[in-house]
Amino acid sequence: MRDTWPLLDKIPFPAIARGPLQTLQVNVGYRCNQSCVHCHVNAGPGRTEEMDAATADVVIEFLERRRISTLDITGGAPELNANFRRMVTTARDMGVKVMDRHNLTIQEQPGQEDLPEFLAANQVEVVASMPCYLAENVDKQRGKGVYDGSVRGLKRLNALGYGREGSGLTLNLVYNPLGPSLPPPQAELEADYKRILGERFGIVFNNLFTLANMPIQRFGAILLSQGEFDSYLDKLLHAHREENLDGVMCRNLLSVDYHGYVYDCDFNQMLDLPLTRGAERPHISQLLDEDISGNPIRVAGHCFGCTAGQGSSCGGALKEAAE
Image (tube, rainbow, N blue to C red; front, side, top):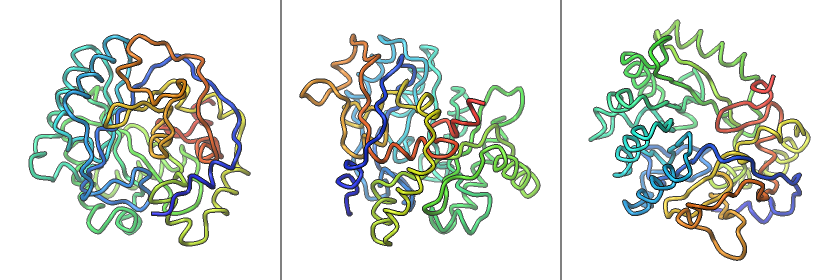
């Protein structure tokens, strides 16, 4: 796979620093039942990397020692990791909010039949990938049959109360553009999703998050192979908004890989750009008692994917949220 880092490293980005740490985003492995063209993790069924029990224990200790308010679990398909459910239940017992970056079709994998009930019982916030409300676009981006499987997954979650007012069970959907373009306005697209999915299938959900595709890993390689890398970066640069710098996720989030090493964000993790801490590659076990607020954040050309247009973070558009 062609590496975009040498190109991204040449593009300057405004200096930014960390604020108070609120969210621990943990990538528990790259194994997934899907292989999506936009995936910045390059996850898929053939990947074997995963977090072991000892590293999961350190993550749990970090949550408790540092009094982290939110645990954001991602992958791959995070539910395939053997430590996923233990991490969820332990964090919830501490009163930590837990988010599951969920692809919906994982519910139909062997051994995951009770997954929706487990998530509901632990009041896990589900952040579900649904890159379009049209079957053709979803299957083109994520694989044949994924749209139908996603609809079935959403219906299972709705049946348990997810996305329904007053249930306390939050269901958010995530949109990614199909190709090298910026997401459309989040509020307008959310209204379209709710109308069309509601009319066709009776599906309800809380919010839609629009995310820009990052020019790294699998998507970056596709851009290079199609000769669209430079034009996409140019689009991101020209759409940059200074006011989005205040809301980027890396200011209050720490990203942890399956080995336990730490990064400013999930994208830096995929580019192998560890958190700045002297000459060493820091491990989460070394930060149990260290305050990293005020530390500089490692930035490069890919960061314009978070500040272009409305802005893009793990919680969706920045500009609309700020307004």
